Length: 98
Image 1 (tube, rainbow, N blue to C red):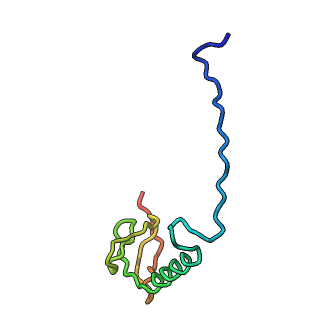
Image 2: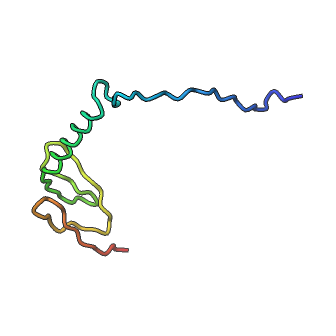
Image 3: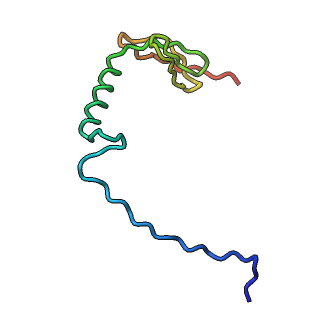
């Protein structure tokens, strides 16, 4: 006799895997994979041409030259001491106070 409170394993329903269309559609309806790659590469090329001017605030590097705010975290044992001509930050190691 089974206890009415005992949990029985649930049967998993088998769902057939969807076949992907071979026409190159992406997750964006109406845009082919080729067109998506072209747009993506164009955007990446534009982003690489932008020169960012970074300022360190605590353990964040904050860009103050772009029209939209963005930042990145840096390790606590690094300190920004300047920028290269292309906007790449220059870091030095620093001792953490105990």
